[in-house]
Image (cartoon, rainbow, N blue to C red; front, side, top):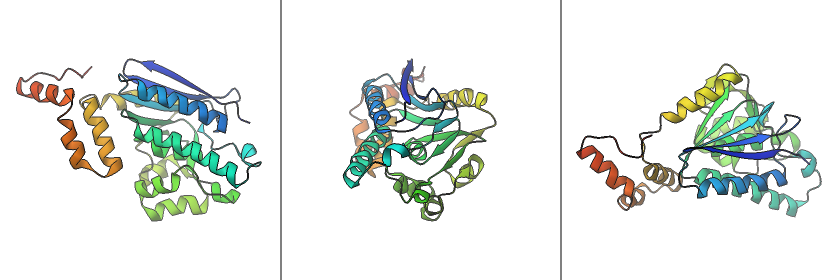
Length: 249
């Protein structure tokens, strides 16, 4: 079983979740995914977090699920593992903070599914991304088919999960899988930090409600709910008084 650790750091309004493995190959075993679930819950409970960055340390972002562990599965164990993965990725998608996947290397299978659950993806040029499960006689089990189809359309999504072939970060940018690419790993951290700063104008409550509206397909009630928040009162007052809103750092 993989010994990938999940680490959490919080610096002001930015939370960083890191996957770390001594050998450098981060893998999503059931134990790792349970730890990940606990860390995501801690981020969700922290009302100060406005940006959540998810990154890999070492050779890959996340190489995928633990294939050696899955070799022992029957249908019931597969359901249990799939439900665990889906619950964690649904929790990522539901975070009120803006989420960014910082893809430092391969994001394959479950790694790509995780990246798809984030709001944005920034990748190193050399990174490979893909859904190779069909080459193992499997399919993505953590919501990747649905999220990829929603993001890039059915034809391009099918090319990924039916062929099992990875695409480069540059192809991912062309497809709309990746939002930005950088040339080297040392460029990734600074670019992610600069990218995150571009969201400082948006009120935290408005960002959370906009994400909810996009997820649920109900912008009318989300719009109305804005008027129950302190952020809306502050934002309107700041506009009328011609001053910056107080949530801007």
